[in-house]
Image (cartoon, rainbow, N blue to C red; front, side, top):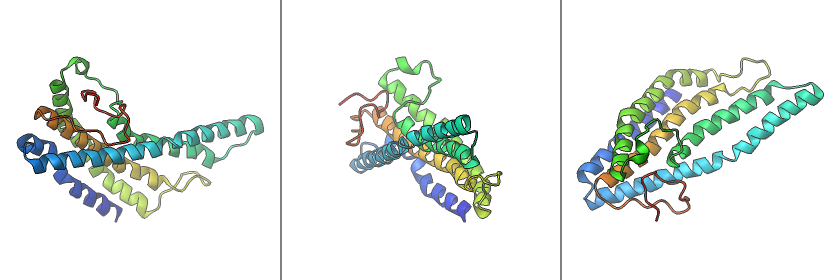
Length: 221
């Protein structure tokens, strides 16, 4: 059932993958432009909300690690659940926070030429990077994750430790969720790039999103 759900989400998202190309070809049409702006706004708002919610797990991660160290150092005791909870929190923060980090353009770039490019050049890099790198990798992640995530859910896979957290199947589910959220935010960035290449005004950032959360070639308001 879980594999079927992942497949359904993937097939539902598939038609939108090529939308940046649609905008390049027909972006002057009012309906296409309006849809692109609405799509960017929706994705950015959702990604920003997920990022804002995820950041509150950081204090819990610190508390979890500190409590484990304190209990072991002072009282000489520790529990598997405390140790594993830190791993769970870390995985959730990384997987759910990746999309917001991409929105903020804070992922590490290996392209040493990107910084000195013009806005058009940066938009081209973002557009080609989306289709040639992000989409294939994310689709591969979702496709390959189907079987082992579905199996993990079927047996409700838990910790290998007797008193560990019985939620390994939830951790494995984060892999396709990560791929889907990254591809969605990549879609928004690629559509922005298509608008830039079409000579259109940059899409306005959704209200409530600070200037930090914008593409590196997006001019301030």
